[in-house]
Image 1: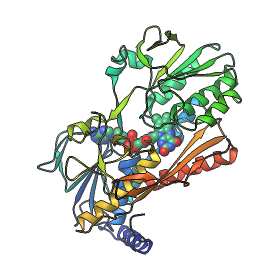
Image 2 (image 1 turned 45 degrees about the horizontal axis):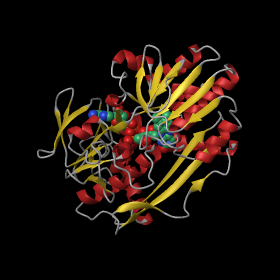
Image 3 (image 1 turned 90 degrees about the vertical axis):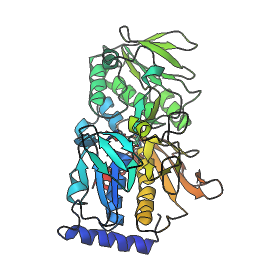
Image 4 (image 1 turned 135 degrees about the vertical axis):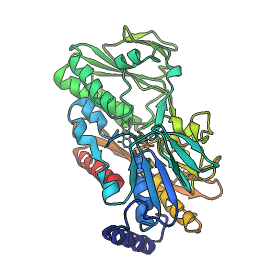
Length: 426
Ligand SMILES: Cc1cc2nc3c(=O)[nH]c(=O)nc-3n(C[C@H](O)[C@H](O)[C@H](O)COP(=O)(O)OP(=O)(O)OC[C@H]3O[C@@H](n4cnc5c(N)ncnc54)[C@H](O)[C@@H]3O)c2cc1C
């Protein structure tokens, strides 16, 4: 995307050759600089891998990630619906070290000293860098949801907005719920991680209820004025496929919860009491972004230069994925994080070699949403760098949305997941 096709193939060839030579793909084998990547999610893992590939093994890459395995948020709503298991959305990190010579550090970055160019680790020790890439994802703004600040409350009212133990725990709550109960899902005002994600979740819970608990209801309490992604397709699914099960309530801003009674308190509407209350809280860039001093937008997100994804504030620190202040029309998605990572990796390889980064990056996005266990809809977009506006802008006429849900798109969606996991971690 950022190199000529010929250059890309040459570099890719060099990377494969280097990987085959003992020593060349091992940690410490780099000679063109040190990059530390914080966060092994969709953005960070992709950046780490492509830095190694596109530098032909010359850039020394260390990836800091506390998790022992990669657990995907995409497809995790199917675990909540019951048609997939957590193991189906879990991928090993092993290839990153074995095939690509990335040094994996199982730890949490706790501070950044941009003057000395070091990252401090919670477990003690420091990692020096020439360039630092942060892709730490999101943290929740618990102070915005009074009543949900304690560990006990958070055990009863789950977010399940980071795939892992909470994904399984929400599934257990739904299984334990008696037929005839209400599952209420609170959605924060945009921007939040994965615009269509909550609506897909509502569909997956409804899919489960339709088969196992047909007298139960899904109540969507949306702080937004309308469905924020693919509105026509989701509303059609609720009116037809899930008629009598899903109720959609826009402009329902959560002002607090009572965790004991599983009650949602709402700005201008009556309280809602649920059998299972699932709250997706408002979000901001994860803590390390704040510690690194790169949070610049609304005290929540990180502004970046879209040619390199370098922070507009702190030199030599790049930010990817959900943590950034997005360009207009750009979703906070795994696909986008993967694309940010490639633009950034190519730019960092160029900069470390004393070259200018490409002036014409293009990124793409596709978000698939499962309506049933097999039938899917998608939204796609293409975003091109505009030198005058200094941002990525959506290309008119490129992309679009599905005409209707279909099983063919279900096949594409599963292939998308398999491919992006291979691209990110393979
Ligand atoms: C239910 C759901 C469904 C979704 N479905 C889709 C979909 O179908 N398609 C799609 O494209 N996107 C989807 N998304 C969105 C997608 O998951 C995110 O946009 C994507 O994960 C963002 O990537 P990231 O690299 O910014 O963050 P993440 O993937 O969250 O990675 C961040 C990583 O950083 C680590 N980390 C954080 N702080 C530190 C630290 N201080 N030190 C070291 N490591 C740290 C974390 O452990 C984590 O592994 C979905 C999200 C949800 C919740």
